[in-house]
Amino acid sequence: MKMKIDKIMLNLIIGRKIGKKFENNHIYSKHIHKKMNIMKKNVIALILMLSAIFSVAQRLKLQTAWRAMNDYELTLKDNKPDVSYLHKAKEAIDAAMAHEDTKNQGKTYAYKTRILYYLYNYELMQEAKRLEATVPDKNERMSLAYGNTPTTYFEEANKTLEQLKDIDPKYMETIQEGFKGAAHLTEEDIKFLTVAGQLKVEAANIANGKYKAKKFDEAADYFYKTANLNTLLTKKKDTANYYNACISAAKAKDNNRIIEYNKKMIDGKIAEPYNFISIYNAFINKADTFNALNYLKRGRTAFPNSTELLNTEANHFLQTGNSAKAIEILKAGLEKNPNSFEYNLALGNLYDRMANPKNSDGKDADKPSNFEELVKTSEGYYLKAIEVGHKDTKQLSNAYYNLGALYNNVGGYYQQQASAVPIKDAKTKGKELENKSNEYFKKAIPYLEKSLEFEPNDRSTMVALRKLYIITGDNQKATQMSERLKKQ
Image (tube, rainbow, N blue to C red; front, top):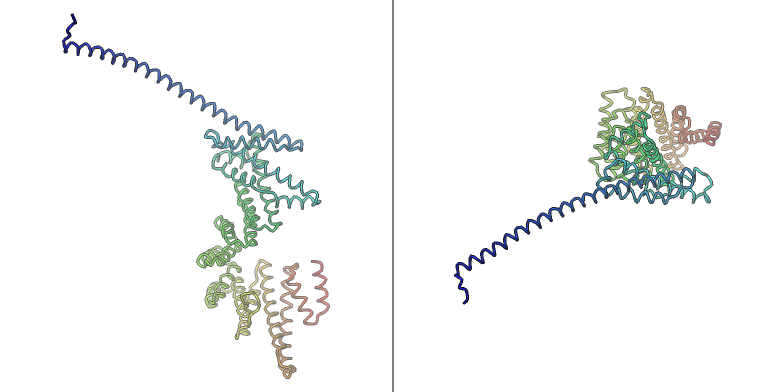
């Protein structure tokens, strides 16, 4: 007989079996979870281990860079530089720079600066060696080499050195003190300091090389870099090289560089009147009158007694057809200080330019109808400036020269007038104008001679005097001045 199983009983039996299965699954799940936890811990441990290994590898990269760099330095001592060491060092330092553990270490930047400088210097020496066959003079050869050698490595070295200051300011302070001889440095510190100092020297040499090659825009950049390096390494403002950067930018006729470099000197409080005039001219060239006048005003505030700035400001209004404004500015200053050499000289210059205008090409334009009146006014201010005097002999020399030049120009004007007189009036009006001309030529001579006493090597004064000696018939002095010019 088949066993009859109640439905309810069947359900209970099945339920027990299922329950047993679920219980077994739960036990199994716990086992798996435990195993997975163990595996997870192992993976984390492995990752940490690999990370540590990789970190050690990166430190080894830094060590490799140092070792290869030092190997190169040894080949330098033997005068047989092996550049392969440098390429190995650069590969290793680039890897170190890319990793979190070493990319923010001052040591990494110090090594990279040295490696990059050596690479630049190697290319420089190779270029100098190449020039040996065609340029026998060593100084000339090096100057050309500096002008020709690519500056990619130098640029990167310079940038890395500047970054080091932000990455590790304390180390940079140690190096700065080292330049003063006031810090105890390790052998590695001394090597870095030497390279940093050499970068500064090389920047100046590159600048001079570029300037000599008439690459004035590049010369401007490198004079600027030289000044920045000097300031970075010694904490002193390098006025001379900032100024050279401004001069080079002017020669390059690069208005943006002129503005940037002169602004650096102005903001750094190491400016002279020249800087304000240069930046004024650059903004005028860019048709930015607002900023041009703003910097001119700042210059006048900083150097209220500067004749150059006074003349520039007055000339601005004169050239824009506002001579009344120019005169107003100068006379307002003169009212406060009637015995001011600068204001009297500036007004003398202003009336001189009004009497002897130039066209847009810089050539003499027609004289104004009130020429003689303007000349007389200019003469009065020049004489007052000379009477007041100035402790700076160059400034005083300018006053004497300008008055002599004014008389010379007036003499030339009457000479032209005499030449234009009709033949029938030559003996009367023509002769009168010739006498007037000679009178002014003779008046010019003592003032130019006095100017030459203050500046005995000024060639333009010598040339003007020789011409006047010839015109006025003083052949002896003309010969003496010719001999003096030959010795220049």
